[in-house]
Image 1 (tube, rainbow, N blue to C red):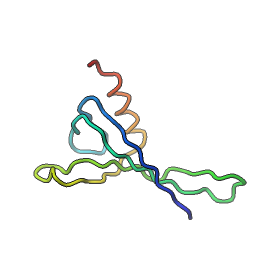
Image 2: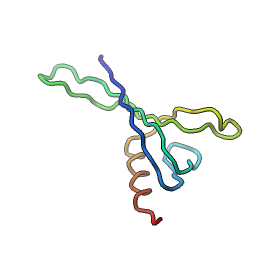
Image 3: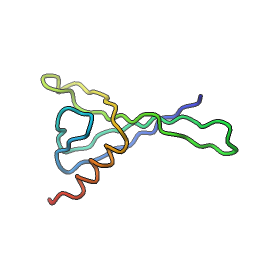
Image 4: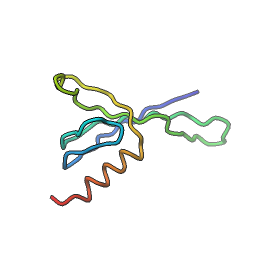
Length: 88
């Protein structure tokens, strides 16, 4: 099975709570990695998402380290929508 990873930067203007992460994250930019696998047997290349991870600062007292946490893609989209709908 062939897989690929896509990386993007997601920016939150306000502190954010993402389902599946046990703490609130501060406003800022976060790297999001999406792993996808090739669906074989089709006459054209098509991929399906198999995992979405976000890089966040470590939980206290390990803030200097980074953690890669698995999250749901819909949970990330909900957090982005909530952040965009908040007043400045």
